[in-house]
Image (cartoon, rainbow, N blue to C red):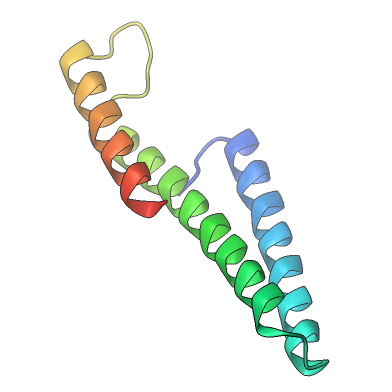
Length: 93
């Protein structure tokens, strides 16, 4: 869960874009659009949701493990989270 006001604002903006993508997809399907553009929209939607999920997961890990990136952050824990998130992001692509 995004905790700072700026993180929350960015998450809400991203969710609004995702909602717009879903609405466009609904209109395309209702209009009987060809499969290819619908599949492209679905892939874009999946990518947007996966990206949001990765951001929320990273925020959760940093908050839960107490690695907010400040001066007192444990560099080993920071590196572990960075490696984990790189793996998760590569999986979600």
